[in-house]
Image 1 (tube, one colour):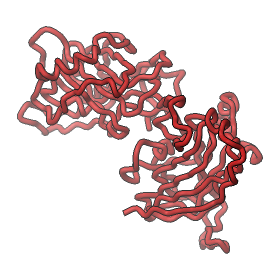
Image 2 (cartoon, helix red, strand yellow):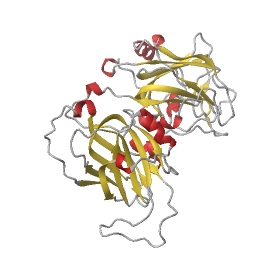
Image 3 (cartoon, one colour):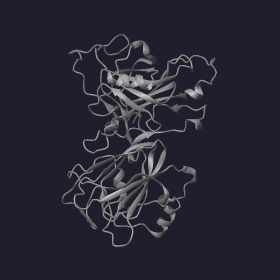
Image 4 (cartoon, one colour):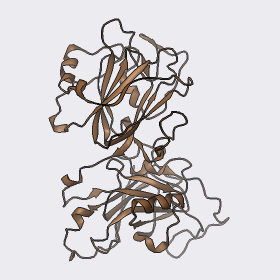
Length: 410
């Protein structure tokens, strides 16, 4: 999840809350090469947490800095690094953060990008521990095969502004609808950058999808996104459609405790809490399709998991979605199709459900997860078939029965 920017001159037409950091180490971003890592390695650029400063911290090479910092260049050229995006897709903006680099930030930078086929990439040497080091001739030779000098410029050479010591964000919009897989960050001539956030949306080649395989239609890596929610006190709903499993409670969606809970709680005959309120999050699918399998994981939420949940789906146009966002998702009840009825949840467990979809032609574009009364969820997976595939599948497929399975988390 990406915080909305508080400064920067190029952000007024972009909803940053619907973008993800495609380069972050938390989604699989990786530094492939850097010309120099003398004071601090380029891997710091893609840390998921915000940069920090330790006033009295030094290494054998100089001041400890939470970012990428090269030595003061005394040879021709400039410094640069190459990274592979963890989420490949459309880039909408960059945040070049020079926080705490008050006297040694890179004065200028540019950003290039490429869309490379993974199977055709050359073997790049593993970087290992880099502090105090510069790229070897062998590393230069390997990275040269990517021909990154010729990659497309998304941001031309631009001066960076230091801002405040603890908030040195420089934001740049990107006007491109292309799919990108790799980034080259150039700094001129040398210096430091704390973080590089590559803000965008995932994009999957759905034409290459195996029609016999389920796809997670809400995955953020494929382009799924949260477009509305009731509460996100301790974690944004975008977290639950993230890459891989959750790493902690901080990597999930957690709401505040509802204040309208009764003083004394009671259950109904099915063991479901009788409470008046609920919390919800609405997601736009990465591709319209049919949901056949639902996974709701409460891992790490041992004392704060929801009591129960339900999942509904609907079909909305882009304009209808915009209208619903303005109306805080007050959508007529008949618009929602039930995918999962009200169902009891257990703490710290992965729950697997068959969808209530009546037939494979029931395509949806949006899904709503409702939790009762409040609490946290670590992951939501909505597996099924993209509409271009499922509409070709036979209608005579038998109706699915509702079932539930549990996978205990350690």
